[in-house]
Length: 177
Image (cartoon, rainbow, N blue to C red; front, side, top):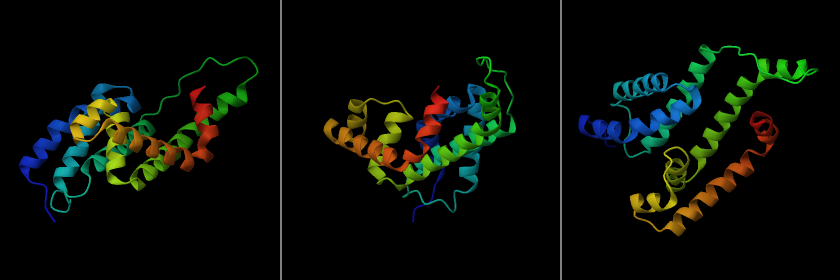
């Protein structure tokens, strides 16, 4: 089992810091807060370097860690913002204020579990597309595979997500309104 040395850590930091910050910003809505969160994740990774097996997918670990810390940040810094709702919808406002953060956290935990269950290459392709924002052609070039392989792997990942997240469909629909 290889360990994370200084050179590999620096390389990982240079490659992953910008996309992780953008990923975190999508959750917390603030680039500075996202940078702080990502810095904390990398500090934690460095402190655990003796126990981290670099043969395992570190990108998945980093995205999951950033995601979890973003949820913690949102929970700890939650502000109640009045929303403009139609008259006669106080129960909807109550539902939004009381439950949606917990439902979102539960949904995100389930999404992370589904992503973790994907085969390594499939997960890597999905993360590069959805979280790093790379196009299929860019992923194919980066991983030295065909665009068709990227399409197939993305199709598999999305199918698995749809199958595993069907019970959350109503939450997703409600949150997208």
